[in-house]
Length: 203
Image 1 (cartoon, rainbow, N blue to C red):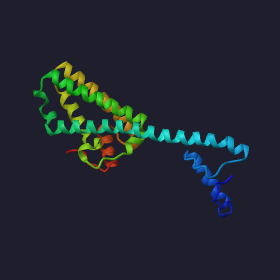
Image 2 (image 1 turned 135 degrees about the vertical axis):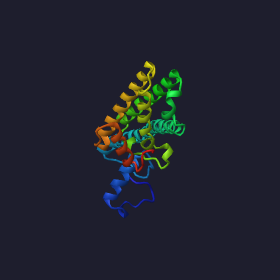
Image 3 (image 1 turned 30 degrees about the horizontal axis):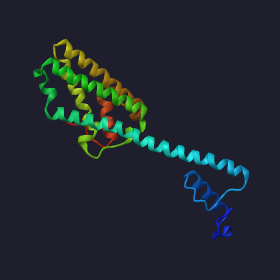
Image 4 (image 1 turned 135 degrees about the horizontal axis):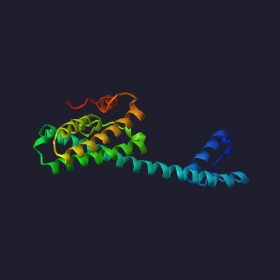
């Protein structure tokens, strides 16, 4: 049934069918066209529920994708700050407790990034225009920190360095297997990751 003022003959049947379906799916419900056939009256509410579910899923996706991006950018900035301070080159002068704390913090952050890439694979393809926020550019510095820390003699620092190494290996394996498909060790994988994102690794 049509509201007054609407000439049903002026519109092709296919156009009317698409119009009614889209209005129902989007839950707009203008009320200018009302179904009279029983099967359409039964199907329309289910289509409206489908539209509501799609809208909810889209909003949920948008709210879920930003926390992983924030964690990735935060880790990039953390690595940049350590690199700017030449932390790997001066780590032998840092107190063992402080050095272990920094390495453990990086290890925890890298583990979260690995989980993010597993649960939100689409996040890998979000590229950063700002090099400072690009984990693809800053990540190789974590390898330098690991190597410098492994040269320390204190057991606590070496233990933290080994955990950091495991986290880097895990992240490298995740990026290689699911995204870049190349690299024999984390350094090569991270270089391929940077190239994929149009970034050069930090010198």
